Image 1: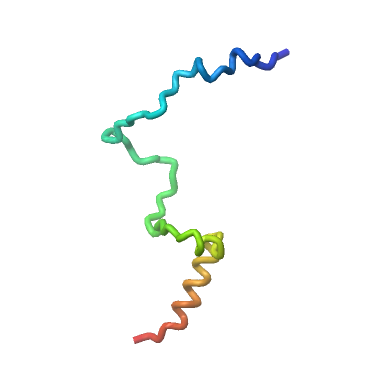
Image 2 (image 1 turned 30 degrees about the horizontal axis):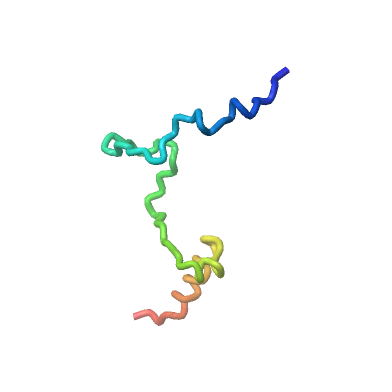
Length: 73
């Protein structure tokens, strides 16, 4: 049977974590498991707008309505 670790073993004082790490990103490679969709972009919403549009589908739906209201040239 496994015993739960005691408080002494979970002490944060024994961790070897530093408050800050400097990673060398010059040797980084793309994630081969990530999706490769090149048409996706990231847009940062202001907090007041993000309260209304909580999903990407809601944002896309509102933008499509706006685009349909714009007259074509």
